[in-house]
Image (tube, rainbow, N blue to C red):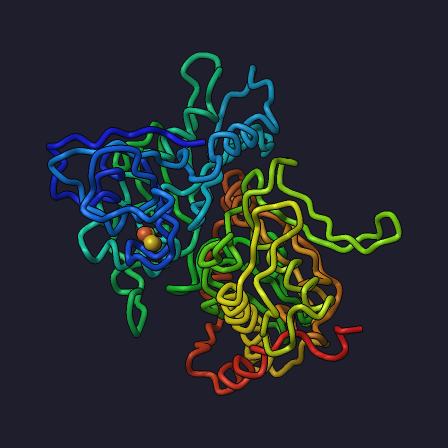
Length: 499
Ligand code: FES
């Protein structure tokens, strides 16, 4: 689906991406407007822009300027790939009768890619409704670093504004149909450290360069009025450092990592930054590894987020006596691209069939039969960087805790990727070290869950704060183990996994 937008003559001289943002049309812009990701493509239908379109009529909005001749362009729908459907699907998933509920709270998880919000009955602790939407800030860049750069270059207020606008819309969706004027009295927000800075309109600039200093890590309190939100009080969950955010701290909270336990347990949240907390020897060790956005579908030519139509599983099956590639898509829709789980599956499959070798050389670009989804050599290199960063991070973290991956008795994987991840494929491509304990559990959106828990139990918020301050943060860029393991793990899989 696409929208037709008329660019008036008065817009002459404005960058097209910025013009569209100003009109509330959020295009994906994974590279932050540097002209390298190709995600901001629009189609010129008539008129003129400062650049000539490609032969197929498309043009990168971030590189084009409006002209005094005006133009008519076609823009992919609001999320570039079907947000509306995704958001409404989520909101309808658990509607509930809200009559008779006196005190309401809201939990908000500000993901770099996705926003999720839950309405909670403060008396019973029950989650009544959930809604989600893509983070509108993605038109300023896919990852935290490009958002920090945007904020530094003068877009801090805009980044906060677009986010708060979406939060207001989500609140409206959550409270639709409530009797009287009952509205949530408390909102607890969580997310990575940069997202919480942007939510509060505080500059994240200090986290853009060494020594990566956040303006705050502890719980922050605001009134709803200060953020122009229709809510009494707003709290943010505590973070441990610039790159160990409240999201993973919350995951550790609901995983019981704060309790004294000598059994090594690992919590992983694999996104643009692979965040991890290891509980071992009665201590907590944390690290964040720059995995890059490949495993979230960005920086991959056919990559998309976890949205309807995203290929989420690929496998081999026997059909009519022949080995055939089969796939599934989110929502059972027509395939439009690969999300992180589909990407991991497809790489594992290509390794199995020999079309991808251990060094990462792809015999030729591969198209999933019957789909427009094609993986090329440059995509494979992005996967190698991402999976190596995660595996090396786990190895460096266990080394710092003087333990080994095989001693880890329980692995919990948080986030959307964890939910759909085929762990066999993750081991096959070497995203997870081969000797890591195989007791692996997906815990879904543990960040949102932790905010829900804290809404009704203030003692839990204090426990989260204790976890955040107890985390010994390992600087992977200074770790020789990480650097060595990163190079070693660039190869795909190992002989064991080839069986
Ligand atoms: S190519 Fe335009 S935002 Fe990346």
